[in-house]
Structure formats: structure tokens, C-alpha cells
Length: 239
Image: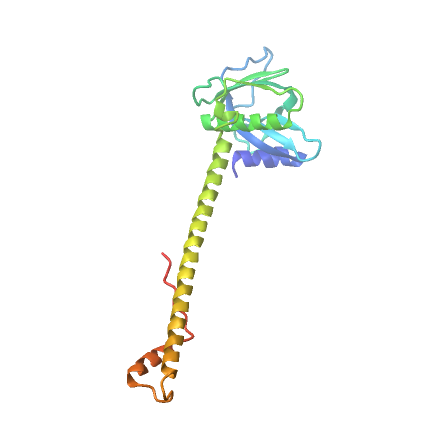
């Protein structure tokens, strides 16, 4: 089980929440420790998680989760509501970088994500969530690439790719159906022509003075007619 799946199962599911996105981060600057601090608990991993409640009214939270070295469990540290988020700073709008800042009413953190892709995905989901759930005051997104805030976003590009694939498949099916229809029409025409030929040959044979005595030159034709009557032409295999 991945770390993100474990966080969702251990931290959010018991509280009837579901995690929308998570990114593993480290601080860009060292946090100042109080003078009376007696030491930390060792190295740890930090995750910034975005979650939403399953019950109504919907509440969205941004939670800082930690996992200390040597432990398999996760600990919920700080938590803010979406309304407390004031600004998301993407640092550089001209390149994909792992750095970003989050500013809340009572906190300001400078982070470096584990990768630029993880940071971009988290910021994009966060922006989409703010547009959907922030009713009054929406947070400000600054120095973020336009692809993260709409337009040619990752999610929109994926949706466009799926739509394009469906359209191509539908067009291919339509073209195949048209080809099958043309083959069926040609087969029907051949069957009608063959039936008309068989009927004509039979009438010619019966119009002789003695219908029971068929001239020898018509015998092969009648035999071919009897064998052919009632049979359909085989369809050629459609390539």
C-alpha cells in the first residue's frame, strides 16, 4: 500500500472524510525551534493533504500529516479549513518547479515537493477544489503556470485525450458499418441477378414444344440453375 493510500485509510476514512490530493514536502527554510526545546523525535516525512467530508454540508480541509522514522503510523499535525487559506504561491510561472508557498490566516509555510509533477498536480487539484467549494472569499493563486489554473491543464488534457479517442473509435465504427452496408447491397444485387437468371433459364426451357424433352444444349444450363436456385452468394471476408 502506498503512503498516500495509507494516509487516507488511517487519517481520513475514520472521520468520514476522503482525501482528494496529497504531496510529500520538505521545508525550504529551517523552522526556528523554541529556546526551551528539548529535542525532536528524529527524522520524519511530511505530507500536505487536501480532504473533503462525505457528509453535508461539505467541509474542505488542508492537513499536515507526519510519519516519523521507524514508525508505520501517520500523525495528524496542523489542520486548516479552506476558508483560512489566503494565498498559494507557485514561485515561478515560467517553469515546472517543486517549490510552492501556502499562506493561511495564522501561518505561512514554504515548501519543496518531492517532485515538480507532484507539486503541479496538488496545486491544480487545490485550485479546482477552491473554485468548487469556496463560496465567499477564494484564495489567491500567484506565480502559477496557466496550465494549473485551467485551459490546458493536466486534467483537461486527459479529458480531451479520452474524448478524442472515443471520437476516433466512433468514426472507425461508422466507416466499418458503411463498408458492411455496401457489401450487403452488392451481395443482394448479385443474388437478385442470379435469381432472375435462373428464372429466365427455366422459362426458356419450359417454353420448348415438349417441356419434358429438353434439348441437350440446355441441359447443362438447367442443371446449373437447379444447383444455384435457393443458394445465397458467400460474403467475401471484409478486410
